[in-house]
Length: 121
Image (cartoon, rainbow, N blue to C red; front, side, top):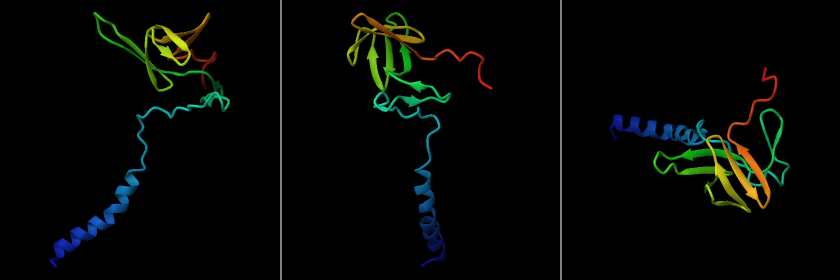
């Protein structure tokens, strides 16, 4: 066998473990994993130590005029204004928040919650 072919085969065999290791790298742009049963487990832990309970607003999509279609992603589920999320109705999708109504109770989910008083150090 030609020595050039042997070198290419050797390089291919030695390169396979590198390819396998590359598959284990995490995508830094991927959103954090959702905890589907966060409420059952006491809520997901936030960076500042507070517990996240209830539904979590992940993103809001607003279409261009003239229709201005509004969609929100809550706990990985895409909903539209007037649609249902579990037992709640999506009453309003604003630029930074979503209002859910369960009977007479209303809950506002905020995309970017206010920073804690005093800020971070």
